[in-house]
Length: 79
Image (cartoon, rainbow, N blue to C red; front, side, top):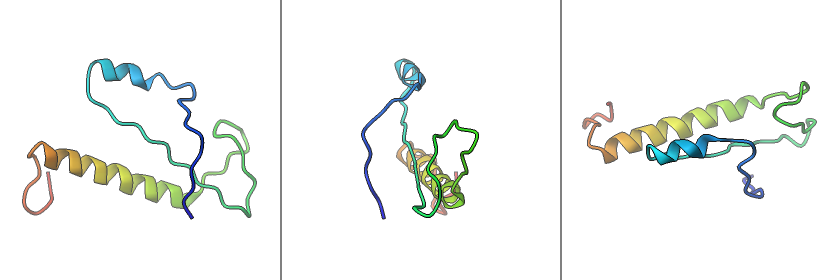
């Protein structure tokens, strides 16, 4: 299922780029209740493989939508 967490910028300085260009930022997190939950930077961190595919789909879709908004995508959906 999908859940929500408290909003956190963590230690990211990414927002400084926003002074020079439009930007977007999202955080994708998944947790399988059958596995140990650890911090991203912990040596015991074990990536959930499904999150990689989901994250790639979100980023690709976002990029294509941005290109479409800029008029840079052809009728076949390709840049």
